[in-house]
Structure formats: structure tokens, C-alpha cells
Length: 299
Picture 1 (cartoon, rainbow, N blue to C red):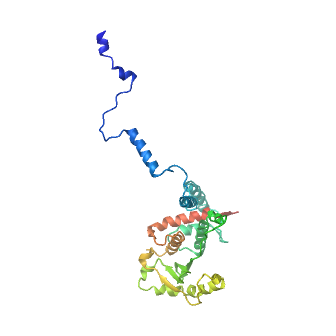
Picture 2: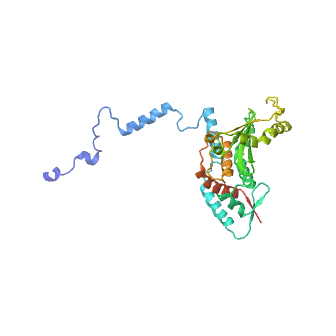
Picture 3: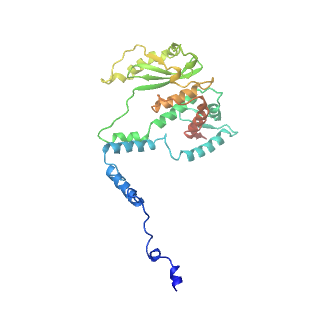
């Protein structure tokens, strides 16, 4: 009987939890440290986990939600693009001649999209107009229309105008007309070919430099008394240096560089042109599908 009792476990192993392990004086328990962290975080931010009460924070979250709803950021875009790719490939590879309306009063066939994807083909005026029309749709966020519901509305002001230019009969550039300081900036993907002769492009956009002041006057742009009156003198033009705008290395990508540059300027990223020649094939391929996704089939 004594032998049986000697082999039984201690009574506290059966009815009570094991004794706490020994730890140093400065080593807190895991549960204690978790409670300590929570109490510390609550002291730092008493409203942790609650909706923000500060008006600035509320406005910031509204802006974040607004841009998350914009066409530039769409969580379901990958699934949509799979369906677009399927329909696009079926349309382009169809042996029958088919047409689609692309939103610029022009109907195009499969050749329009093949040329847009072909790296050896120049972009025509229809390609440029179609993609710029798409960029304008993306820029006109429906959320902007809600700004007039309150008593105070902060609206965008026109400080610059983007103008695509086909110069010399063989090259695409784009100009940004700055209305606040009355000059024109020329973005040229072939600037590296004539780095020391910027006047060549300045002379090619001379019609724009002379015509734009007249357009502003005739359109009533300066009817607002707060705008500085400008005369009808020719506007100054500056071509960006080769290191300020990406340069093409082939003879057919000027249109793609122009469209990509315009997109960056519209998004406010004109100080960070981070695309290069190697990005152009993917851009042209994506541009073709984006235009297709925003077109309508013609029966």
C-alpha cells in the first residue's frame, strides 16, 4: 500500500495548476505585459479604435476614401481585366471586319488596336485622341460633383493647359501652357538628339505661342478681374532638358512617350517621370485594352 502511494503524483498536480515558474524581479508576466501595452496605448491615444473626432482627421479620411473610389484605384480591376482580355482577343482575332465606337465620333476596326500594340507603328491622331479622351474620363471623378452640396466649395482652378503637338510632320511632343506665368513648357522625348538646340522645338510650336493669347482673350478668360491681364504678345517657350523627361531610343515611340507624359502631368507627377523605353510595350498593350474596355460595339 505504501508502494502505491509513493508512485502517485503530488496532489497539486491533479487538483491545482502547477506552481508559477520563477522569473526575475524585472521580468513581467506575458499577460501583465499585454495589459501594460494596452493601457499605454490607450493613454497615448484615448480614442484608439473609435471614429476620429478631429475635423482635420475626418477630412483626411474622406480624401483617402475618395481616391480609393477613383478609377485609378479599383480593387476588382484584375478580375475585370481578365474579362476585358478575353473579349479583346476575340475581337482582334475575329476574321470578320468589326467596328467599335471609341467615344471621339470615330468608329474603328481591329487594325486600330493592332497598330496601337505594334511597336513598329507610329501612333495616329485617332490613337492620341482616344487615349486622351479616356484620361479625361478618369480625371472627372464623380465624387467631385458632391463638393457643391455644402455652403463652401473649394474648386479646381485652371492654371495650365496640356496641348499635344505633331511637329515636323513626323514627331509627337506635348506642351504645357502655364497661364499663371504666361509661358509654355515643351516635353520632347527626342531632346537628347539636339541637347544644345532647344530653339528648334520652340520655333516648331510658334503657332501655339502666337495663337494661345488670342484664344484666352476671345474666350473671356481674363474677364475675371482677379486674373492678371496679358497682352497678345507671343508666349515664351522652354524645352525641357534631356535629363528632365524620358528619352526614346527608337524611331516609333514618340507618341507613346507623349501620352505617358501627359498622364503623369495630369496626375501631378511631372517631377517624377520614372518610365523608360522598356515600359512602352506594356503601356501600348494596356492602352489598347483600356480603350477597348471603354468602347461600344457597332452592330
